[in-house]
Amino acid sequence: MSISRVAVVGAGILGVAAAREVTTRFPDAEISVFDKAETVAAHQSGHTSGIVDSGLDQKPGSEEAKLTRRGLQLLIPYMAEAGVPYRECGQLLIAQNTDEAERLEEIYARATDNEVPGARLLERHEIGAVEPAVRGVLGLFSPHAAIADFSALTAALAADVRAAGGTFRFGTEVTGFDTMSNEVRLRGRPVPKDDPPAGDGAAAGESDEDDRDANTAGERDGSGENAVDDRDRADGKVHDRDRPRTYRGEEGREPVIGIADELRDRFGQQDWFKQAESTLGEWTQKVSDAWANRDGSRSGDPGSRAGGAGSRAGDVPSSRSRSEAPAEEVLGTFDIVIVCAGLQADRLAVAAGLDAEPRIVPFTSDFYRIPATDTEVVRGIIGSVPDPQAPFTETSIVRGLDDGLILGPNTFVALGREAYDRHGFDLADITSTARSKGFWKFAAQTAKTAAHRVKPLVSKTAFVDGIRRFVPELDPNAVAPGARGVRAQAMTADGELIDELTMTRRGRLTVVRSVPKWAATSALAIAETIVDRAFENAAR
Image 1 (cartoon, rainbow, N blue to C red):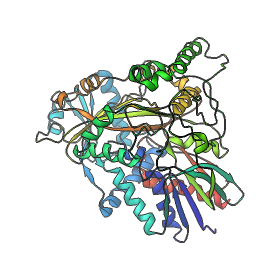
Image 2: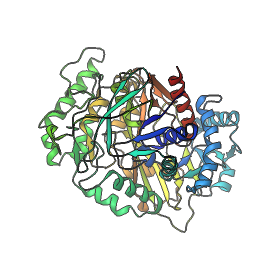
Image 3: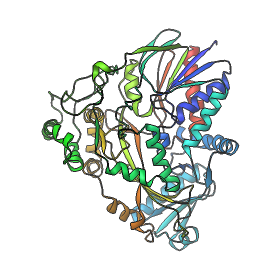
Image 4: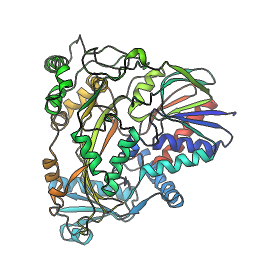
């Protein structure tokens, strides 16, 4: 087949890995990578604890288990050759009671079937030999689990793309696609330099890259402490996405549980919040109406703009009027287009004329940190036992690459798909979640935990107290805010979480709709699968 021009939308780890895979298979192809941020790994890929998954808890024989195994086979030698920071440190899952011990034994059985090397159960008296400070009734130890710098990995992959002649077009927001029989036309607009991508929560004067670097530096060596503290003290920010968007299609029509209460708790004293109080009052009323008539019709939902912009003129302060927004333009025409947009995957799929489902529901993952000390309280990775009935309650303690400790994540429904600042939210994204039928059903199915997660945030003290069940020696006074990530959770209209690689296609366009939870570990293997599918479509 003759392929001369290929575009990848999204410069996270998967998008860049897919671009690199294309350059490897088709060295004569001209490849362009588009992203509205100003750097690679600006979102999910650059906001993690760095755990390299060893495949402990994956269903034996599943595609995800195969991707993890293949991903590790490719990842470890690549990082060694490219000089990407990587350390094998071992992972210990700890059960605190009988129920957790039973689940841990089930996970061990899966790990054995998945041939995870060296995985073994540890009785109470054996745990101390691996992690002396850890307390629990049963442990599952994976000695070859590791941590890595996924931002550095993405940068290394991007260097390979550039070396092969590929180009990166940063600061460019892709807004639409025209799919034809043998090519795809991309439409979009430049992101103004003085107007960071809506919803990123960055304070005035901070770029997305500055925010990411401050956070990840805080993880690695503690140097980001002042930057984090300064952002926490800064005035809260709100973005209403008043730049017009061309995302097509209708969203669902239910509001989020407890969002108004959470916003009041966090921002009630801010002047801009008081301006939006009437809108939040409407949301509160709709929460009551929706719970009383969950199967009935609803009308008068806040916001009507395409793509769920969801805020009305005058509700919130805005940084750029609609008339000042850059005009949409044709970005180019390509033989193959691959979309790895993560948090924006559903919106871009709709823009391409594809099914709106599955939706993306964003979940914020807050991490805390303890700077490196001479005391080796934790040697590797300590994790809680996963609970299928509470999918967002897993936590870990990780000895980072700088020997400091990373605690988290503290997970809750996000107030913005790209809201990394602790005093920012995006009304458009809140409304998008609020209109998701799947979210409502998910919340009802997991009411004990999901509904709680939408209420005011768990305090740092409460979160750290929970972590200290595993390691009582942790000094709570040494804990400081760390990185914040936003997880793009794909969800069906029935409220089912999708944790496998899912793609949809239209002509020469392939859109990645969801990825496994530990996608960074499997990035190189996932890239192979994405390119297989994309070019299979082209062959037809």
